[in-house]
Amino acid sequence: MTADLEDETAKMATVQLQDKEPKKSKKSKGKMKGKPSPEEIAQIRAEREAVRAAKRAEIEKGGLDPNCPPELQFIRRPMLHLHENEPIKGIKIRMMSYNCLAQALIRRKLFPDSGDALKWYRRSKVLLNEFKHYNPDVLCLQEIDYIQYQGFWKEEFSKLGYASQFHRKSSKNHGLAIMWKHDLFEMTDKMLIDYDGEKSGEIEPRTTTNNAAFILALKFTEKLAKTAGSVMDKKSGILLGTTHLFWHPFGTYERTRQCYVVLNKMKEFMHRVNVLQNSNDGDLTHWYPFFCGDFNSQPFDAPYLSMTKKPVKYDNRCKTVIECSTSFKFSKKRESGEDAEDEEGGNIEKFGKDQPETPVPDSFHATPEQTQIVEKMEALHNSLDMRAISLYSVGYHKVHPENSGIDNERGEPEISNWAHTWRGLLDYMFFIRPWNFEDNTKIDSLEHFEKENSVRVRGLLRMPPGSEMTVHGQPHVGEYPSDHLCLVTEVELL
Picture 1 (tube, rainbow, N blue to C red):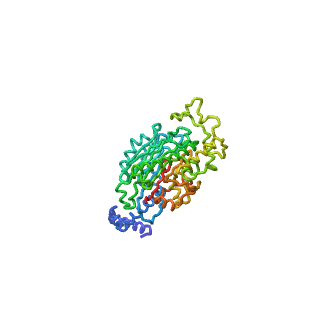
Picture 2: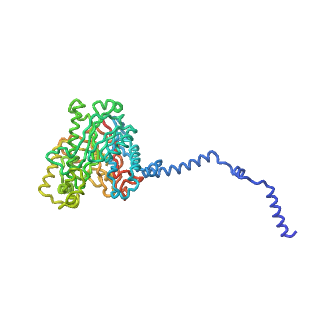
Picture 3: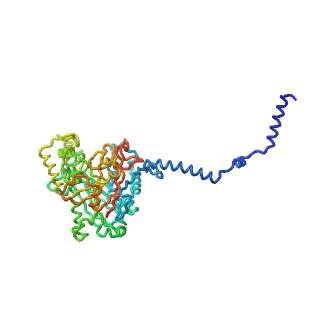
């Protein structure tokens, strides 16, 4: 047999042998490889879950909720806690202050980068998710549309177990709201404040602002009082006020007057509840007085300093800004709530003679009359035996020192407002107390504040510094639903 014939015979034999072998089905092929064992299945599942967990952790690291649709996301900030290893002996409550950005005030030119984040049907859901997430016991809200309060917020908060009150000037379509968990508090008194009509010594309002404030007496329910036992025997509840001060860039002088009204009306209300609800025993410590809101003032300007740095002395930048504000001429149209654009002869606020160019000039040469009225404002505040203590000012350096006092000397965070046109700190949570005319120009130490007022600061919501914020302004999809960031404080009342 030749070599070629041998090779061909071998090939044929191989083909015949292959034809005789049974064909392997897909099923039998799988059996031959073998199914994964229970251990291998568990390992595969564990690996897949680890991948999912890593993705969730990455999302949560950015402050987002992995279970929330992207268009309803908001950046979740952590509570920064104090006294963590100390047992709670009194009543712990969580308070929020938040300028929610009134829908009626939104203009696209003011929010050019916000896109769909401005749409109410979406923004309302994000705000509601934010309220649910932080779960405060009491809320002070500013820039709440009257229509939205009546048709949306009142009912939604009721579903969550809150009672509420709303207040505004009738000339405005937005106002203020205070909400509280009705199983913890019951409202027993209310004071409404109209700044334009309130007395402030000999100082008259410089213009009509249509700004308002209000204060509630929220009495502890039996359920809440029982949680602290005998510690709360002589305690009645909290006094809680909120406001949104005059917005105008040249309104520093008027805002400073409004801050006097805040302290004076809190004093009046504190005495009123003592007379009506505590048998006029003269002991003002039955109630814990708080006042929160958007003060449209930074920690180095006259409105804030007049409340917190007693006795106040206007100097340096503070003096320059408040004196400059006295030179600004407001339109008479404001008196009737009309638009100054329609003023006969042109808008005096924009085109009036000798109007200041900027509200924060490097220097300002005040006239004798301007100097005198600023001195009167300083004396007015120093004559009032009341002062305010910022909860973030006394405690924030303990929990977030790298963002405490970055651009101010009062230990406050850098920002609470991050809009397209302006960024800075405007919002505060104050504890109000009598002032004995001693030197309280320095920030109260946390230890002294807590001992003197029977209030322990248990936590403060983290406020991001400007370096962590985006180039664009807020609100923005997936970030924040307002141009302001909410403040949250946990306090233990002793």
